[in-house]
Image 1: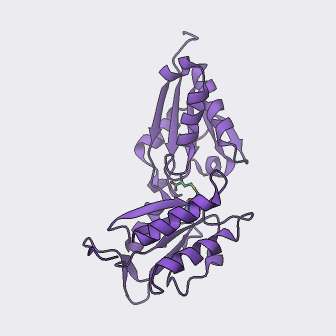
Image 2: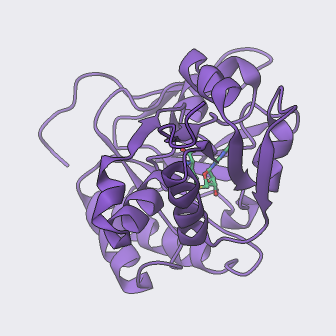
Image 3: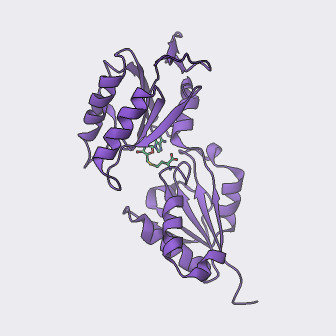
Length: 257
Ligand code: SAH
């Protein structure tokens, strides 16, 4: 057999948790992979890893993992880099292209593909009803890779533009205060009765959802496994007995903000 067999790199979204939310394409890519790169916690959730070389890591050094994946693929291996949710949404895909830009020109002919997954925002929205039924935007509240001032600006403008807002990475052990600052900005631009959802660990055994208002929301409820949804001026609830209300945003919006 040729030792120069063409390798491949697949950047694979695993969805938010359960296997039923793993796409068939992702499942097949994992089955074909010789090497799987990703966070330990993601690797531990994967089915059928026998016979594969696992490169688990704890740290947030995405660029190093991306370079590692490209180098292995260039050497002829079939490599999967996994990301939770969708790899293109605050995940590994952008890190892979940052690494590709920095790599030797020959790497540009590598067989690279990004395989989509169910992002946390869509999983949370599906649980609640249809909160993203009208225009929405997604913001990453982490200031690890961008200045906090930019986050504040985008948040204020998104709030003024009356988008439904999905907040990824609202807090972590080292970033507990910023989510409070974010809510202070939201409260300047949105009415107190605006719907707010905390969706924690969606799809996992410890899933917890809560529906509240901007006035009553306690930002301290958010952790690194929480996605926050902030409704627009038209987002509303349909109460139902014995369960959380449905949350939805009607398809029609008036011109007034
Ligand atoms: N690529 C991922 C997002 C990575 S950023 C995706 O597409 O979903 C990590 C953030 O995603 C977390 O801080 C949290 O805000 C959100 N998140 C990821 N999985 C989640 C889940 N199962 N439930 C709720 N939020 C989740």
